[in-house]
Amino acid sequence: MKTAWASVEERLKKQEILKESIIREMIYSKANKSLNKLLWDAYISILISLLFIPFIIYVYGIFGGKRIWWDTTIIFAGVFVVLYFPYLVYKTYGLNKIDISGKLKDNLFYINRYKIQTKREKIFMIILSPFIFILVCLGYVEAKANIFLWVFLICMTILTVLYGYWWYNKFDAKNIQSIQKSLEELEELKELDISKN
Picture: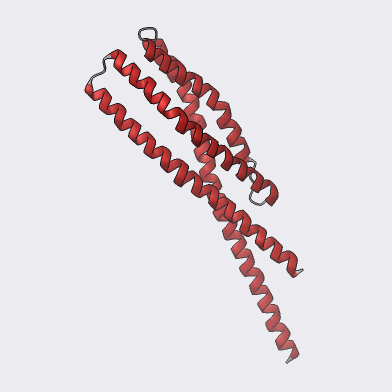
């Protein structure tokens, strides 16, 4: 009877350990999936910024020097992209430092820093966007743009605002929250392991 009881108890312990390892693996997988989404988005943003710099130079070379508001808009866009690029690299560098299987304290620090950077970026873009829109509108007025170009500008503005809203409030926030939640769950599992021993 004693050996049978010990055997049952041993099997229960093995099942509990197996369940914990399965849960831990699911949490790691979920966090890594969210982190990879953020990293891919960051890499694509860096690539687009890199491609945008020669495009701005090309456009200014072709159309520059004819209209003051057009030139101001293109120069402003060029300066913005050149200054924004190092920020993107820095933000991505911090995101790359997250290692889900590494130290929890460091991971929480980096994901919280990324969250703060994204919040600041969002505020900056909300402030900057009307300024860019006004510059483009002044360029359109100066160039006496036709109705098709105005409709195109309005449609692109609406699409950009909708995409920005989705990206900041849905995509980015959801993945940051998922990583934070996973890290907290891993911390709880670690504390449970410590309390059992």
